[in-house]
Length: 219
Image: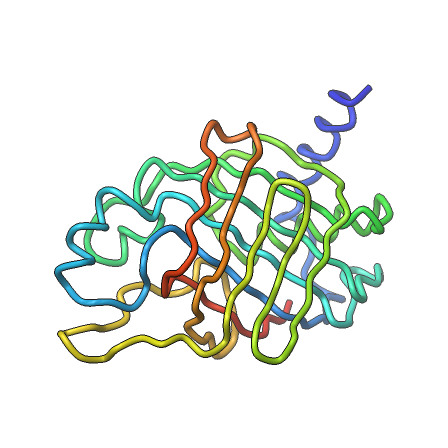
């Protein structure tokens, strides 16, 4: 039964980009953290570019709005992504990574809401997610506390400070852009970035880096 439900959810997700965008009108808060600095000096970036940055956690919380008449007010969807190389390496001249993704959907969502949330996340992240290896309905806590954004769910956790202490000296600069579509993205300080599930064959905990982005999204 679980396998059948997973295949149904996966088929729905893969079909989601074909759904008409007409009738979509929603907005909310987006946050991500990866396992590589996004604002740093060239020397550190050179050392990290080929060895880190393969993993990331992304999350969207809908403040208000609907997709094709389905209200998504207050619901959350999150993704843990693993690439075969730095997820942003193509921005600095490398090839795009091949990636796999575990998706987590707010367990308060109905079947129709889950479909809408999955389609939204996939569309806003473009081709980042690659192969979807799992879709799980779980309790998710997402809070924007003014000075930080937190995400807590089984197997995944984020804590992103809104005031990153990035030193513009020593040739430091922004190397990457957000992994998903976001309005006026801001660089954040990653206080926690972890994934502990078996789905991707990789687990990580990578705190204390200037490796995050946050902002508002619309769809």
